[in-house]
Length: 91
Image (cartoon, rainbow, N blue to C red):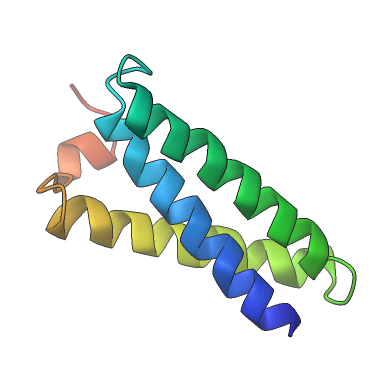
């Protein structure tokens, strides 16, 4: 059951992070609510996961899969691919 909660936490975090772009710096109320609720759900589910799974394993899965899924969502659904210069922090 803990891994189902972890999957839910990852999905909620990806939804919230993806909604940040659409929130227009928190000027659009609908997207802003999705961000706040998404992160709230994500952290709540992550707290439930930590009852049975060690923090190192849970956080590694949560952050690693979250990064990969946010990159996928950003590229394919928001049409925002990151170039190598941007990845390296160059202007």
